[in-house]
Image 1 (spheres, rainbow, N blue to C red):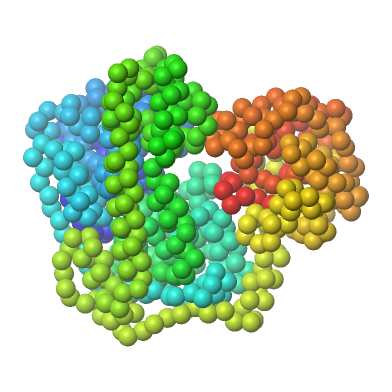
Image 2 (cartoon, rainbow, N blue to C red):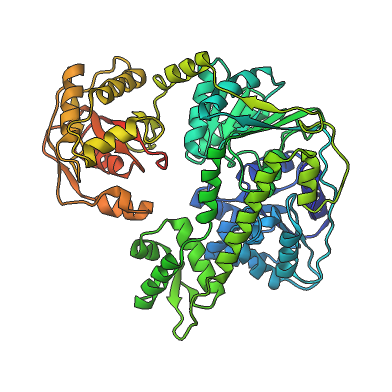
Length: 630
């Protein structure tokens, strides 16, 4: 079933589930949707539950036990749970009355949000009796994606494709002179727009930057991204539903599963990878049929990010062969493969699934652990599908650029691209109304942006429920201003100590985050490759703040630069038990200084050592936080 957002796809399978005997299983990648729909079903007296990574092991086990006892009518399951042997076995034994594949475009490599774990759902469907109903739903499927879904699910699937016109949408593209021009223009625009809405950004860093900028300009905004803990995300989702903020500034981690009818505007600060992505993300707005504003800011510089996503959509052939070589040595579990090849977990998961599909490796369970093993005599790696996929994704991005530049009806453009061959103009988009909107720099606006950047300091998120770490602060993001280039000159170009402006900015960040808080001790992270740069910075900070400096934090062994490691697992291995403290820190509040904060793994390991030594609290202060760091 291919129907636009707001059509009522969820109601179709929810009602059907209540009429069938036993339990129905709904596979969905949308955590927010699971929570929302399970809450609504429960209030209606329909027993429902969900299983995803936000539950504790005990909570997951409770759901599975009740499911086996026949307690539920509907269970929502995240597709990655199909990697959990216990969950998969229970699902098969439940013999579900119906299986629903929501966001079914995820099942196709040609879809805009392909997820390898969706292929496991196909394996489950193959075990169902031939007469067992299976429903696949999506709002975004080109004819190619539709064909792929049909091929994979099979069993005489019937396709229902509806119209995709959203008559209440006012689609606009704003051509921005620069990134600063976007900031200047968006603040004025949001103040004029009715109701509340969502601003989508391409990265976590941008969500923080735009949200803080809007707050600086007196607009009630909050950011939302995958770096937030689950409780914070739930709180923001509830705030959005209740219109407590003018806007939520988010990555596409927000919104896909929220049933909020009155999202009055959606703004994109970054051009998406394809019209598929774009239609999906704007689809959550205006479900009540009232006037809704859809705005996309565009600057040619923005193209680099989606191009990078497309290039990285599949790992390189070199990475595939690294995994093959590691498994030729010995069978390994997922973590073992990650350690052997030094790649991110997401990349390793993609590679393993592809190698299984090509018959190069096999997987089996050993206890409760999944093990991967090279299949001797297997054929050579076939990279043609990856190259074909990259070519198609590049073509989709070209179509997105065409959307930006077109002078034709924008709604009609999206409809046609998605297989709805309508020719009727919407008469509401900027093109149909004969408008061309630009965002340009102004002298006063640029001064405000510069002043804002002197007050916006990234938070270093290191707190845990059981540790002594408290969130710290960085003076800037690496690469967003001239801070990164100054650090690079000192570290790698014999530029001497970090310049005084970095010291002043770091002290300003400290005072904004910690005010007049006193620390008993200042420590600095022992160097891997920067000599006395951090030590000298720490001395200056301690002297200025009149805190005691200690050189008591030392290494038990030499470590490698964390930047060479791709995954959290290998970063942790690099620094585990690599430090000791030669100083009395009992009951002391400690400020720890470093130059760059990336994943936070090093700081957290030091915090663990200091906790064992009796410290009361530890807070980090760094010059910069990397754009890729959490």
